[in-house]
Image (cartoon, rainbow, N blue to C red; front, side, top):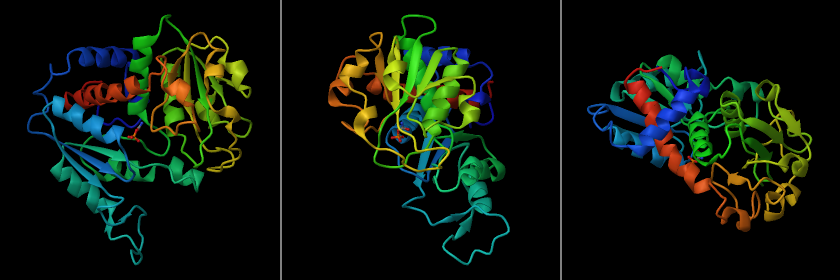
Length: 316
Ligand code: CP
């Protein structure tokens, strides 16, 4: 694998999940493959899980890591071509990506959607500029439209907890006071499609995701109807796609609570974290023994380790 930009970069997704679980069972079996190599982690946005789990994954493969937070440690980078840099940006990505590529053998990039201009976000300017001007493999640590490491960790978690081959999985919109991107939901839906799960999306009217992502998947605008017979409930907020980046409603009718979980088939509860308690989901669900949120965060390490291994060994 050259780059890991989205989950479609993987030849066989089922094999990838199996391999991730094998690595989880024997995490130090590959501790020498990264020796004398360096992973650079470049953050244009904050992170807890992605940053720490990827550093841990690198360490278990013998890789050194360098981390830089461009949002508070660096100057502004220019991404537009042929521009006169007379304003705030002090360095062009053409130089920055080439320079960082000299220090690193693999580069991870986190750059969220700005949620102001759909076309701009969908162009994945920051991530694609590093792919274009960098000279080493690039890993997506969450971009405008995709979070493939989270989706792989979620797939590992589902495989570990499912009790039927094709469980019913419901990804449910939930309220949030801030406007949030679509990346986690997009990658989760792609992952569920590649895993042949029985996937249902539920969201209020006005919150339908990109139709290219949801094509062929059942979208139900009645949350309680969608929850019937579910084996997994995955909660996530996202802003409107049609009325791009806007918050259309914000009442708590869509918050996940114990009563709604009782409609399901004893479903497990999932969320990528960070989560706002008693806004997205109430304490009784998050603190229950059917919540998998801590397991998901743990599996971020093995997702990252598997992807780093595939890049280092140039596997498909
Ligand atoms: N789920 C996730 O990507 O967490 P962080 O934003 O803390 O990295």
